[in-house]
Length: 66
Image (cartoon, rainbow, N blue to C red; front, side):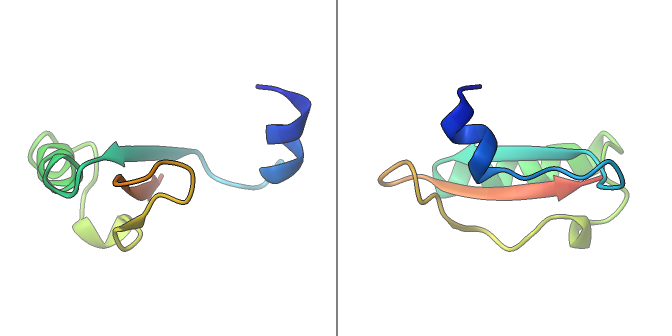
């Protein structure tokens, strides 16, 4: 990542790992369901609400915090 992105994403040593899912709304929903079925996520509430991606027009995103 560039220095610019590093300043936008401050990370602390105590933070947990994150998996970002970015795509069309249907792709994001499909991936959430697939992660749940494959037991990567034990509950759908581990995902943040689906929101429009601020850096990609027409795309949506969610984050899985593990």
